[in-house]
Length: 281
Ligand SMILES: Nc1ncnc2c1ncn2[C@@H]1O[C@H](COP(=O)(O)OP(=O)(O)OP(=O)(O)O)[C@@H](O)[C@H]1O
Image: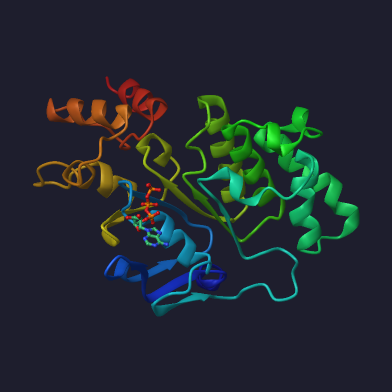
């Protein structure tokens, strides 16, 4: 089990990133140490400009670290599956095909997937994000949200070990957002490491670990429980102290707990809150 947890992990060792700015350089990520074990669902939250995308690009080795190193353990050598993929916030960055279908095929061809598997993998990925009906459409005519879904399909299709969603649901309607979260959940169950970057705390339901950033520095790194619920003797949760608004189910649970109601296990969704409440006598 221990070996399995160490396989395909990402380690950031003293990683910082600085970029050229007016009058010199600006540090976008301060020196950071972080271990992301295989199969973890990690959420990264933070205000605009706090450094979430910078951290994601460093994790994916798209940016060279200014100091420190990013280490991938046990990277699959001969496999055609890529180690990490990012679904970007801006969906225009990666359109490669003349049709939606060809766009998804492009990545599979490019990584050298066996030709007999490519059609099935591309269609399966389009189905997962709900774009099958648009397979023959030009990517240029897609809406912003549909472009995000297409980019997601391309990344899902190539089955990376680590999949980073960089505010990948920001333009999606509620049903498409749920569909994308569901696709991430099923990959997570199969062992894929998920890094879910968001400003919407309602999307943190499946997260096992939450990292919060402020001005390029990690200001919280812990479980959902310790992020959303105060420890005994603490006034307010880490989430509230950092200025985030907890999801509605957590707000309601905190109000009930203030009035002496016991909730077990601690709920993070309306369904879980419903179950905890219905367990009362
Ligand atoms: N290449 C660059 N050169 C200089 N400054 C940059 C560069 N890229 C990003 N920045 C700045 O670094 C800071 C962090 O940016 P980053 O995109 O990582 O934040 P973020 O938390 O992802 O924000 P958002 O939620 O708005 O997407 C911002 O102030 C941004 O303006």
